[in-house]
Image 1 (cartoon, rainbow, N blue to C red):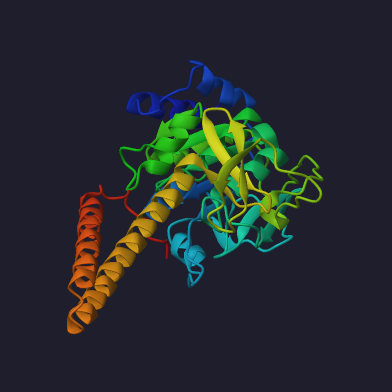
Image 2 (image 1 turned 120 degrees about the horizontal axis):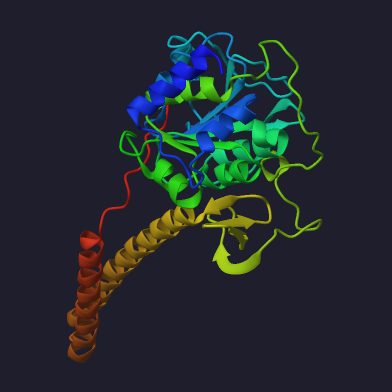
Length: 367
């Protein structure tokens, strides 16, 4: 073991901030395996400053490629490489479809495009949204697991909801390394917490400690410019061209739930600790993201019901006024009574809406 590696291990032991998974010797086992040549990173709200900390001290000769998905709006100005490039010696660029990955380079997913890995090259696609996002973290992580198995490290940074946890589980199952930003440090802790709840995480560390950890994990990896081998895969990911019910139904059990994006049926897929849903065209959700959509639909339906009740009361009152104008007392009393019922129902519904607990904080898009 060289002196640099000994110093790195000693530094982490002194800090005492690495939480190991069930295997107490996991840290030393990861060093023995070494050779990680791909790092995939996902985050959302609050992830940009964490990413800047992560890459700050990585050398230009870093022996792995880094692929990054940050949730961005479709109208993003496209400044992520410039912003992050000011804080690191690594090359930073947006991924281009078909490009071969190079060590020491950070590849960003473009706005409104998924970033995938296929046969050692980058794929940039306009496939179905997952967890309500395009780009989404899960497609990058699961295609990385398929392409690089134990030679990939997956990292979850700050963000809301749970995008990325299903993909991180696949990286872990393939023998790769799972890393999560410490939720106590993250500006938005939901994404790290969802990953910790759903995956046996190898390392839970602060953003500034992830870079040194990656240097340790890549010790003995490929030198800059060397060829990086991949597993050949002919499987097309759903984030590429979606699904096709005429060819193959989604795996899992058909549910009574409908896709918030397209209104199609959803299949429930068993993903270990996590619950996942997918429609036949490829839109996918974890339980938390689908619940958020359903909760928003419930609120929308309640507001619509309130509007209809108030309109109903107004119409009944107009009918009562017309009956009174023609001295139709019984008819007027009937309409006044129904209008009062609608007013009471509307007031009850308004109180329900006003007393509803606030939804989880929404994410501010990067850039």
